[in-house]
Each structure stands twice: as structure tokens, then as C-alpha cells.
Length: 129
Image (cartoon, rainbow, N blue to C red):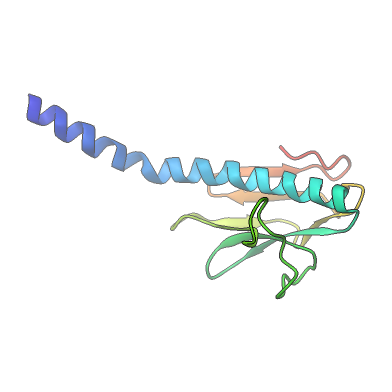
């Protein structure tokens, strides 16, 4: 019984790890979209939320193409703001590119699909849910 309990304690969390990674990544994406909106307001300039493929990731940029030198830095770091999706997780966006102007208003309403979950940006208010 003791050996079975030890094996169960080790094996069961491994079965849930992809679900945990997907839930955590969903929260990171929602936080990143809110950060893009707040950065646009603070710097009074457009900030773009771009979903890229190979590897699948979400990037925050000052230009729609996310070229070199246009990516936002991570807060408190020199690294660029990129969230690489966990393996096997599908990331998509309904309105690409999504941008926020200097007043925090979105270019359009958008739905970001993060695996089975969604992040919704309201077209009128810019509210991220």
C-alpha cells in the first residue's frame, strides 16, 4: 500500500501538467493584453498584440509587423515581451493585428483563443476579460 501511495503521489501530478500549463498560459495572455493597453495609455502611442507562429507565441510590439526593434521590453528587464505557448497548445486571435491607441481604445473587438479558453477584448470599452 505504501509503495502504491508513493507511485500515485508521483504519477498523478504528471497527468495534470498539460492542463496546469494551459491554465497558467491563459492567465499570462490575459495579463499581457492588459499590459499592452496600459502601456499604450502610459506612453501615448499605439501598442500591438500579435500572435505569431513557429513557435506559437504572443508578442507585444510598437508596430504591426513586430519587426526588429519594435518589440516592447518585459517590465524590469531588457528582454522582449514574448509569451511562447506550451507545446500542443493552440493560440489564435480573431482580429489581427489587435492594437490599443494612446487612449487605451482597441482597434476592434477581439477574441484570443488559448486552447479551450478565451480572452475577450470588448470593442467599445477595451475591457479585457
